[in-house]
Picture 1 (cartoon, rainbow, N blue to C red):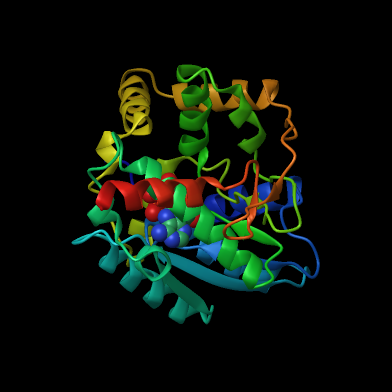
Picture 2: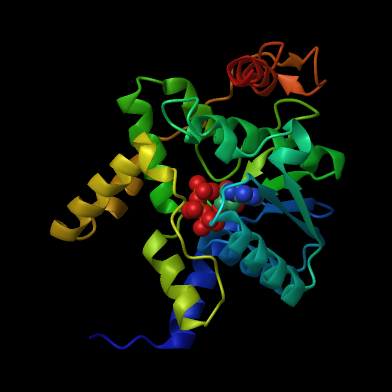
Length: 286
Ligand SMILES: Nc1ncnc2c1ncn2[C@@H]1O[C@H](COP(=O)(O)OP(=O)(O)OP(=O)(O)O)[C@@H](O)[C@H]1O
């Protein structure tokens, strides 16, 4: 087995992330950054890298973290524990907010209502991440999306013939509405295997469990396909990412946003997805 030098590896990870931050101007002076922390490896590395960037760079910015409790028995509580421990260690304030507080039910209670549970989960999670970031005055939401996530999303747009999603690609999304907090992805150029290795090498306590619902998604199939290809043809994921980078030009979303007549959040169409879904779920549950 190949021996890995811890300091060298940590420097490689830090250089990779710091380069993405500076090359794409992810963080600017005076920014209030909200980090979406699930307690898993990607968001815990993001948390540590942004904390370290705050210490080492001469850019002044604040950090807060938010953890959304979807209500997944036997899964989410360990993630929240990891989010609490890791933010406490770094002195970063954490907000925990649940689906149940907002809509009155857990994800578990609505998991059978849709073909893939990831659909309602994604709609509600994105909604809450944005709402809380907006309420907290955040300028940007940092997520732990890594190189693997980005090429999976890229291939998913082809599988679904949904090129509108191109506006969500890239390490930094533009602000398209005053109430829509844009995303930044500091791990955009870092392969997932290196994120895992960083946690192991540094003995970082993380929540290392697959979401019990993730197997129902197209993303899970594409991830498995890419991992299988990578096993046989080393470097194929990096090649896909490099080709993606060459052809990628950020498409500005062409949708004009308005305010949801029910919840007063920014949306492409009123009522917003979350409110329309809530109405549908209430009917299905009654
Ligand atoms: N429950 C949550 N609360 C807050 N942020 C979240 C939550 N779930 C996901 N995120 C944010 O979205 C990113 C992508 O999430 P996703 O579940 O697709 O990936 P992941 O690879 O499992 O991430 P992680 O290793 O951080 O759990 C996470 O890294 C995190 O920044």
